[in-house]
Image (tube, rainbow, N blue to C red; front, top):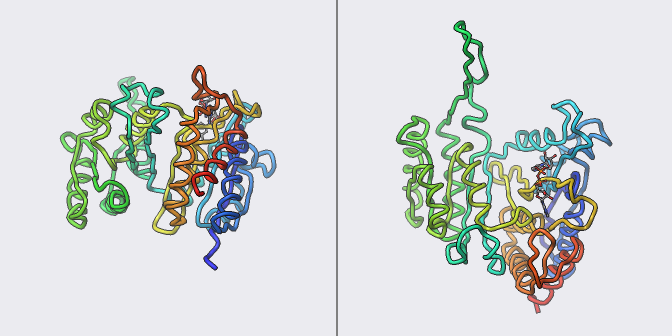
Length: 365
Ligand code: NAD
């Protein structure tokens, strides 16, 4: 019998738990019908963990997260915890997880499902068939570089300082993730920086060019980050994998996300060194405005689980099946409120999950 895939489920707050119930339906179906077995543990994170343990990420939860193959994360936060001290707040639990698991590679796919081409702010022909991956370096760069701070100057002015800093090992490890991804996808890497005005950008470019030599089968190009932003909204289909630093990745991944429409559709993965640390989560937050009402779109969380199947569990066929099932359901005009349009069938969170499982069943026969 094949090994069970270990997974820690952290549903979190707000719509996180509702969406995670739908992931569990998909997991149960895969086990029953495809023999893919999981060793699942579950715990609290964020505000729910604060209420239970007095901290947004308990030590035993972190230990478990380090042991398992992958963490499935819902969302954290909400007005209930607005007054809580910064270091104990729900969001601090997620930041600590990312840091402690050393999740340096953030994968944000921008995949346009054909039935939703009209939801994009771009013309349908620009986004139809779109399938790109933004790979953002997550643990280095200007968000962490020293020195940093705000200082008072003797002339009465104040000075704000942040430092953009990258070392070769950081560029190499994210670079290899980019080229390995491109090999599994459409064989092209675009590396984006500002080598024309920043030394750290020049180093990034020189090192990426070195790494590219190890992957002669992958097409490689550099692109200045400002041009990359422009090209993403001009002709996004020219890209396959875009690899970039923490700051530019923060912006470019949000631009790419909006090419495909709704926040409720966007999955993500954050990966550490090979085989050590992986966290899968929807891009959206805990959406307190709709929590508990059956209005949440569970697709972003379900697609995050599909990414876990593809990138951690090596179950690419199951990942394809889930993505095809989502497409099938959308093609049948079944919609949660966030992606609904006149004339379509409005369904609840739970109904959307069940429709996806039904479509998996249908597509497997
Ligand atoms: P949000 O992503 O929670 O919601 C933004 C808007 O999008 C809301 O109107 C919401 O109803 C809608 N939305 C989001 N996901 C949806 C889904 N799956 N289906 C349907 N509609 C959806 O962002 P926010 O309102 O800025 O933040 C709410 C809370 O979430 C805050 O406490 C914030 O700190 C937290 N947050 C957490 C994460 C995370 O856990 N990774 C990320 C972002 C925000």
